[in-house]
Amino acid sequence: MEERITFSSENLSIEGLLQKTSDTKAVVITHPHPLYGGNMHNNVVIAICNAHQKLGRTTLRFNFRGVGGSQGSYGDGLGEQADVGAAVKYLADLGMQEIDLAGYSFGAWVNGHLNCATAGINNMVMVSPPVAFIDFAGVHAIDCLQLVVTGARDEIAPPAMIKEIYARWNSKAHFEVIDGADHFYGGYEEHLEEVLLSHLK
Image (cartoon, rainbow, N blue to C red; front, side, top):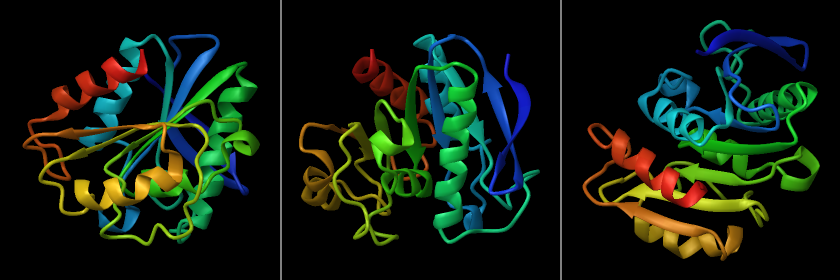
């Protein structure tokens, strides 16, 4: 069962849902764009969460600043990066030794700006990084990037555009396209879970 928790990010109280399954391995999961209704209760965020829980990992999904019960207001991506760093620190303070980072859409863009080593991130997963919607020029090498997933019908994270640029993030990362899925993965949540499970074991 997930429990409601709060942690501090730049003196703001951030709300999250924690399920402690492992004492050492955990993942932080980030949600879509706050200005377009994105929050931690999103169907794709839940699918990512479910996959990691099935792998026996502790999961932390949270609302970015200004969303739901989290204090503050939209931070243009910079504030949200601080929120992610604070979430990783919260897990580290719980004693987690291997902390992964998984983000969907805007959440993937935010995560991509973090330095894996500095932020203490073990592996990173991007689900539908919105390359046709947000400028990814500031996202460079991501040493810990393990997996990039998008839908064949995703117009916000088009497979062709991602294929062109993801090698500059990490050419060793696996790139998977889910046939039939668009950006919102309606009806494809279980398929997404299966893809995550098969590549993250």
